[in-house]
Amino acid sequence: MKLTNQQIAQIEETLVLNGVVYDDIKIELIDHIASEIEAESMSEAKPFEIILKEVFDKWKPQLKATSHNLLLGYGFLAPKIISDKFADDKKKELFVAGITVCILTVLILLIKNKFQSTSILSSIVFVLQTTSVLGALLITSARLFVLNSKAKTTYLFWFKKNFYLILLYGLLIGFGFFPILPTNRNIEIKVGSLIVTLAYLFLIFGNLKLFYKHFQFEKKLSFTKP
Image (cartoon, rainbow, N blue to C red; front, side, top):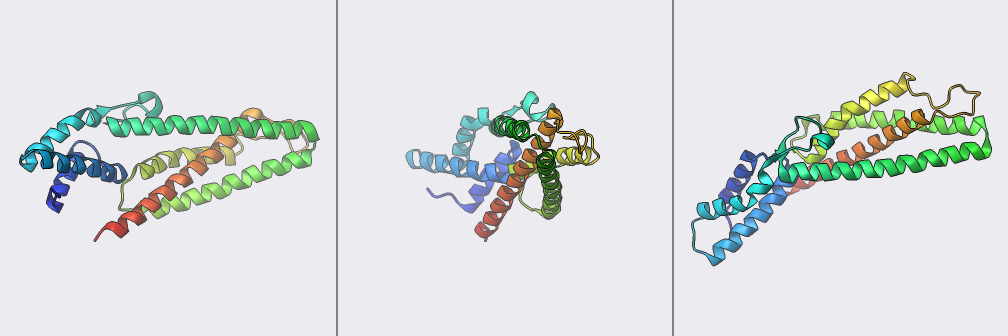
């Protein structure tokens, strides 16, 4: 039995009532649940409402409100399927960020030890600072672009959540709280400041990826709507 638009809307409404408010996850779940209902309606002659309840009873564990305080912050609560996805994404992000920052830090320190040149180090620092400024400008432009966004996605959620952290990082780096080189004539590097700057750049890059994914999803969604 092919579900009607009204029945699909009822599935969506039930998901929203259970806390599934992000369009990218919601569309995926609607497809799964609709397929289950259609398959069950082929094997058993039951009213749609009864099958709907039975299917959602199976999904109840995945829709139970769950938190991952350590990874997602205290006070964050969402259906398990969303909370687990966020936690997994955050673990991957932290792992990739840690590996990337460590590799770049070691690489820059090796360059410093090999060449012992203030001009080379100053050039590296200039590239990092310039990239930071350009990245911050792109992030700010992206934030303005999504102000009127109609789609509500997990990508947009994390983009907004990270945006203010990026602003704080940018201000601290911009006002000189994390100087990589103590002085222009000094070839020593403040490793802590270098790590903070590289982490900031990684955060900017990750947030721009989130913006792009949200933009792509919103574009795709506009094409599928009648």
